[in-house]
Length: 487
Image (cartoon, rainbow, N blue to C red; front, side):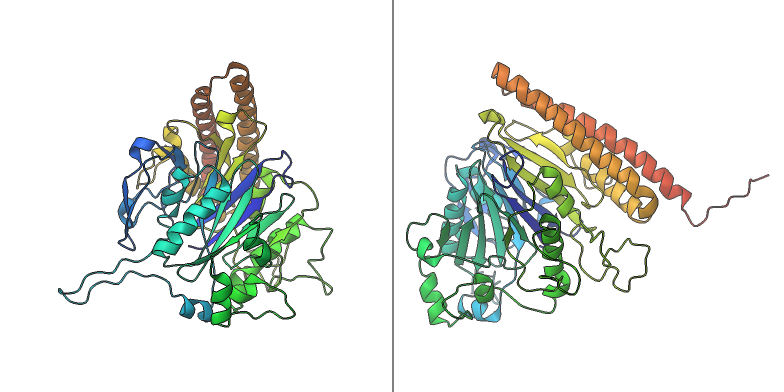
């Protein structure tokens, strides 16, 4: 599924938190935010797409999930934080190449051609991965290792990137073919940007096969590379992007421009991004996987990057100028996003509420980021009670309505949107600060439920108010408007 990912190490953030974030860019999928209690976690998981059945461990933890409202195509949990304060987001669909896919084919479901034959299940994929992994891990590293075990046993039918974080570490994992994988700990001072391509551009094989301090991979990765002549590097260097990834014309329209915009935002002074002497252009194949940003990064920066549409450049689809390049690249914030989350693990918060999930529905260009505590028995109805039919009674549909109306009247609505996004962020932070203090003073973690209800009430008020204004503005711009008074 086309998506964009941002990862933030603890020394790269303004508050020493770790953050993993991803836009879930589906096909206008109806999404909700719920809590899955241990009693509701299945004992045996059945994959809808691949028809695979997997026995699950006996000791699941509570975790948040952003599943599809309609379960007919599977769970598609997308993202979450568990009771051990470990976050996960899955998955970033990534690219590969024929050399890799022929050497280790994807494990796809094969339906029997005759009655005498049996269906052959496929592997695991984005539909399944959060449910199979997140309830059973206590650290980000454990997340990599559990998923690696599943990949090696069952395989996968697609190429994916997966992120994990706890209060100390962020890990990024990428699948290679059907059964192989590679994972790297994000440097504490770094910010990673990943736009639907095989992302890692450096990897320490000696560490992966030695101390495993910051690099992990399939046990036979060296042999796999050598036996299939996959290595395109020279002079002893090892760039996994060149070995396992792609370099296609489509990447230069769909993928690399997103990395360029985010890198440009993070390092406007330490790198040259524009002009004849630019180090990187929107179509560069060597844009780094991670950056040390020119300043510390806050949640609002992550939100801004994931909402981007090349503003401030000739490629902005909303610009009034006829640049000749307007809308030529795929924006980060697009119309068909179902859910976006920022999983933040905060080291200075009380243990019971270290995890905060900033949740957004619909197009990130127009939606607002609402923080909620994750270690709770349930989510407010405004976030979790989402119907298949359009309604203003939940955050998902109200956000979708705002985006659809504001997009057609961007120039007159953008101020309304910015005020809305800022109001939700300000009040959201205020409520979280208030309840962090109350929970620390009383030791009563159940107050998180009350906090979430206040947050949802605030979000509904701000969203409804903004929807009213955006609808009024859209009505003023209807083509059948007529200014002469009726007599």
